[in-house]
Image 1 (spheres, rainbow, N blue to C red):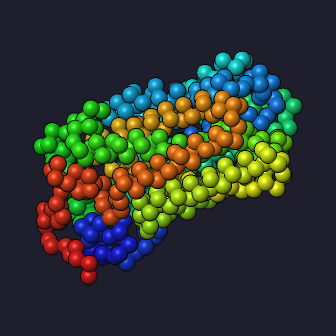
Image 2: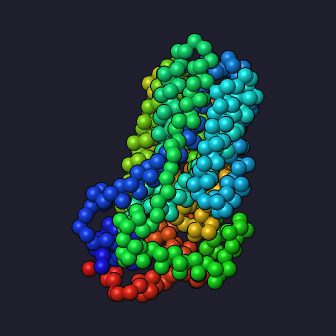
Image 3: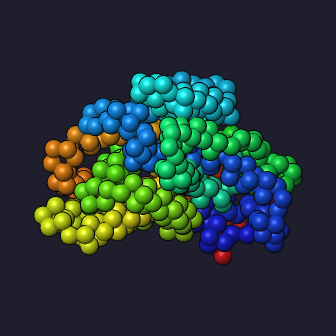
Length: 492
């Protein structure tokens, strides 16, 4: 009934692989899958809105026109301007998870785009620093809507063997937005008016694109409602939802702490969000000019050029890592990323200290090279998995809330980080890097002991990993037994 390959079994497990179509036609030659993946491609680019905002602030801080308008902000005030979008995002989460559950994922995305239009307009048309900061607060709300609703939709409509990779691609689009913003500010740096910063602020409304809906029978089986794959997926969904009702699971935030399996998921979700910011990358994300100044690079052209090149580098590494999530596994990527970031940050700390003592130009440029290494290590896991990993470990009823929690923990950690970073840089300069070396050691231990491998399981099978003896879940072969016929799920 289906062709069981090692690659498919690694991606979705033996049971689901057994009912995949065995028609000998490659997926890229099936029009229904091409249409589905095109719609998911559009959905992925909602992440670019968040990336645009992060890189935009890096670029604006290098522009004299923006500094003049904002009164050359420093310290706590600069931290608050950068953190305003995160503060705005945190306030939206309770509302957007309700909209997502009550009216659907698409309505949540549309709600987010409305706030993006409003926020970008206020930011670009600002007449004073307070108005500019308020616009950033509105833009942050839009990003939260996108980052909760769009990944849910991607996870739930993706073709089974494509789900892991396509969901991982979502957050890599962060750097597509970052790339656009970086080179936009580089292009406007020599404008003689405030349009040097107003134009990049306005263009962020063009980054997200419209998304479309898909249906299982139409886009997973080419319209064949009787296909074994459709029967398997529908049966799996129905049985899983019945088990959830029988175990009296709820869709409230308190329900996320009901069982040990849910508490494990919640620990991963919160720790992953915090780790995504407290690994040192947040220093570079919002304060690249300050970091480059510690390396002796003060030219506006050089700073904006490095910002643009970092964006290109991040896109390349992020897309490459997302493509390997089913081949290498989530756990391998997490551990490799943590080890790489730890090594690079130790080197960054040493080089920054050496440059502070000697002022050697070669040492300063070596520090920039280590920044690329650190970002590359970060992109191996935290770019593709910070959204896709929580998306797949939470059941349908709590998936939107799980994504809200990971994004909220990320933004709260970033809010603290962004607010503290400029103050710490002014006080202890390069010695501040030592803090992140310690945090990276803690992060590595957390990933090693608490982050399980989820490759080879469908969304409905995640309870086998997390719940085990504490909750009712689907035993191996339960769905196959419920279907007519006798699909072969052996490894032959």
